[in-house]
Length: 366
Image (cartoon, rainbow, N blue to C red; front, side, top):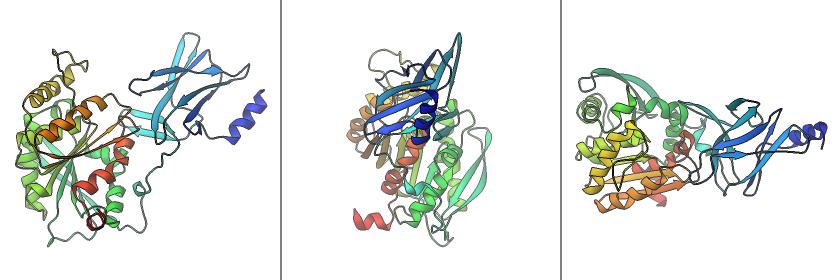
């Protein structure tokens, strides 16, 4: 194969090339070595590519089971210089607060159609609400989602979302809510998006954060919006450390929230000793999880828990399901062939939201 043949080959194929469960990753350019860098627990994180003959084309074939969605980057060595970045041959990119990655969509993976704005779905409204917190000693500006056809004479369930701006920015949560409510999958709900100041401190089992949510935010919301004002009408939600913040807040105030929606919770614990490998930021999380596992108790009536099979947190999340159930909570647990990412959490929103607050469509068919 010469360079002209490489040109013609690349013109005919999307990259990575997906053929059944075989995915061919490609790189074209001058290089001494090239690797695919990915994060799949139990698999090599850095996979070398091979150069095709004397051409500038490099390749590696990886197996990805049907339904997988994997984020990755390429690392290139030229002499002593190493460079890592997104795949220049692949236009599919996922964004997050820490940057972007290329995306490989394996066979069978389909981007949900309910994440895109639907012209038939009447949009809800987002208004800002500034809450001055004595517990946190700062102002917290929340975004409040009011469903289409919001009426002050109606009473709505409440969903409080940790890392709210990230859920809006990286998980398409505004059009998701519009669409799922329009399709009658989810009940009309008031959704409050709250964001942290010092995330590692406020979300890692913080009494101050829990007091803010339960004693300041909820009363303020119930004074300003027509809410159901009972535990069955209140849900806390979060991903990663946001899931820890949801769980630990409900633990401190077990009679306030009826449901939790926990995605890829950073539920790190130790069975022997105190070494957990997560660094000091995880110390308060591990102390809480170890105490909770030693003496589990009911913190809400219903829990929706999801986790990606390819992320390291899959083991702690799987381990917590029987603990939660043993404490008397109803749990729905969902796994996906995905990683610790906002698009994974976005793709699980219909399952979670429609189970926590089902719309009339769900009542009919389930």
